Image (cartoon, rainbow, N blue to C red):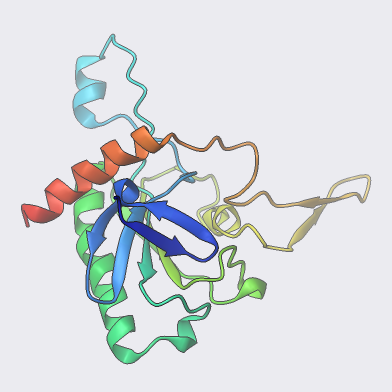
Length: 188
């Protein structure tokens, strides 16, 4: 029987998990914020085949203990979570041809936390991936209640990670990415 991980109310299959430590686990994201950017090799060789590779490198580091707030973690759990984020960040930046990383944690629903279980987003970034660099934070937080006023004064809710415009990936797509990341971690 396959191991099931808990992420708030969600059940996560072992196939989505690429990192397991004493206090944390790392999983690939069901609905990554940024689409996969073509690698330098793909750009250089102008690949003619269409590959349905939805991997983006946007991953989550989740506390094994199901607590809702960062402030509820022990010092050991905080250390483990951020050491894990640093370790996978080194791999993700290289593997996904990124030049930087966004590492973010929303601590509570008013900060945009959409799953009541402490987690850290690790997202590879590239120059120009958002017109306004800080727009990524609107994409991370599903429960963000910041409204824009259009000319007709109608409020528009920012669409976050759970919005319907971003399609969820299949279990198989996530397993492929998780397997690749597991392999890269083992090579460190």
